[in-house]
Image (cartoon, rainbow, N blue to C red; front, side, top):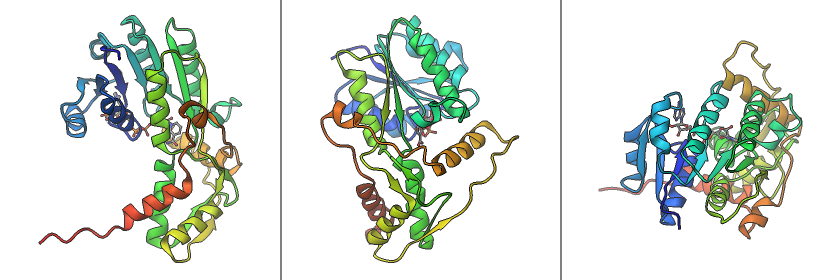
Length: 292
Ligand SMILES: NC(=O)c1ccc[n+]([C@@H]2O[C@H](COP(=O)([O-])OP(=O)(O)OC[C@H]3O[C@@H](n4cnc5c(N)ncnc54)[C@H](OP(=O)(O)O)[C@@H]3O)[C@@H](O)[C@H]2O)c1
């Protein structure tokens, strides 16, 4: 076991916190980089070192990478993604970090080029990493169940309907817990191949099928409604334009892919949409216990 900590950026976010929890559970030393040290302390208690700072603050980054062994590189979709991630990666290399594992964009946002501003930003970071004198791995997860599907479950519970731009376009959704498992596997493996992995769930599932799964879980009808995708706002901010492009690409069937990467790397199948929906419905509809 390495005694040098792994630095996790984006640690307080949806995926980063799952990676931190797993590393801590394995007894690995972890340092998290955050603008919100209090939030990190609330989430992780005394189990992690906290390096406070913003990606744009070079001195804070240099302090955060001091003595680290490995880096989990994650930042939100933004016009700053390339600048932020290359700054963290360069700081980590200057600090002699042995390996960088990057959470990249979905493969269908990157290949073929020209369809996604978010995919183009992640691709630029991947190219930068491939020129660095350290081991690097990029994980390209398909759409996460915990992001878009969680909202769909809440929508069905509230209104007995789900709405999508194309009801028959499939999506190879992946459970964020599987992404975190692969990230930890790649951070701790003895050796890694400098490459990008296309991570997906086990099945391609359409919104029509999701409505049927929700109806079974809720034990009542759930309607599936089609609504054309909104125009991509030319003057919108980076994240809104990126998300509008995702909706169009998904509606065109571009996310309808599965790979066997999870099974190959982890030796077990990926989590399914059917199980995720059952778990979410149970969590969202649980009756709070009576507290006298
Ligand atoms: N959702 C999907 O389906 C999907 C699919 C493929 C790839 N991805 C990729 O996943 C990434 C998003 O992951 P996520 O949803 O887990 O993120 P998230 O929940 O939005 O969390 C963002 C994290 O970034 C940190 N952060 C934001 N701005 C920062 C700054 N200026 N300096 C330092 N830290 C900063 C935040 O920390 P503090 O607020 O504590 O500072 C927080 O921990 C994106 O790169 C996206 O492209 C997502």
